[in-house]
Image 1 (cartoon, rainbow, N blue to C red):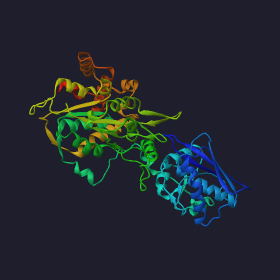
Image 2 (cartoon, helix red, strand yellow):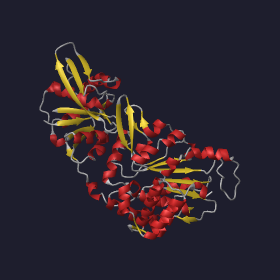
Image 3 (tube, helix red, strand yellow):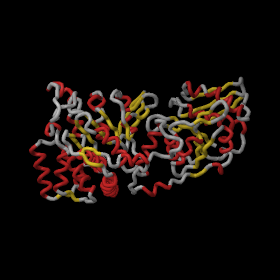
Image 4 (tube, rainbow, N blue to C red):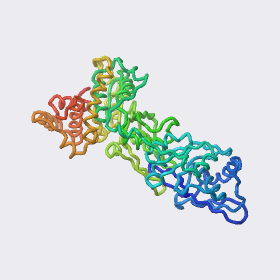
Length: 500
């Protein structure tokens, strides 16, 4: 029997081979392989746990090797692998002749505590050809989400040892959700009904609908109290379809690494809706720290990153969003190592038109100077705004409508079915894919070319207009783009000063 553990680092992490050797000499426990304090402390925990579980602790010289030797081991999830390795080496009984992943934190009583990064550990083990895994019972659902693995959830050290002697204790995971990859479903609970019938600005509701349907980023500009935040927070989570099986894999892995998985959850099915505070640092948004934990942009992968009062965020924080918005990934480096996290998120921003919030209002007076307004908007650089597909200004006299969730979901479902059939959402189309998929008549192309030429529109903004027009067509179940689709797409791509 070969025992393996797992050391989380970034998105990938590394499998750790755990070897135990008993030899004659003064009784002691030596650990080699760059073990830090948390791992070295387990020597005393293991001794008490083994005795309290009814096993004999060997009174010999114990050498524990954790390889690769150049990888620093900083996690208590190695406890169970080391403890079972000591017992197995001492008893020399008939254990299963397989490679086994063993992870969990051991208490003095022998009870096994849950750990983070179980999904990442089990999926990494499966990729390495390991088919058996012993995990804490609280992490069982999370581990069983990996199809093809034989999993055993244990509550204490005795259960773990019994499992390592009997293959029948392992249950093979079979994920039935994989067959539902192409279906479009929505979150159903009591809170969904709260959004139905709400009165919200018509233009903003339509902008949110388009943004969700094509996975476009959105910025909503309007005076305080116009309903920007209310519309975004209440509508987006209720009209966004659930993740497909493939999309959920990377999302579940990231949340597992961050320690955000609940014991009653096998995988993340609902898209994330992250709302960081305005005081968030670059490290908090990007990720980093010990073992390169994921930041907000990665936790929002395949979901939404909502920046309320976006102008209050630091300029450096806003500008760092440009790279993940463009590439869909973010690379973190620490102590000579690097990791790449997926970060394909929709950026949703809400902000006032000026520091006092009354600029452009027909009913209120703006007391801000021209210089203060320019400084206010200087945080939003042109390259960042160019990456925002849908620009929506909510005016004072904006007509309000009652939200019809079933109608919104119908349009979004039609758009998702068309895009999933093609294999890529409209916002992520490459220039070549957009060229082949954008089917518009000559008059529509003429309208678009005229707008681009008259307004000196950038190449990226022109591509965004085409993507939005395509999304509007897909919402009606069409693949061909009409003139009205292009005109509406242009209306959501105009700069702020044209509305103010």
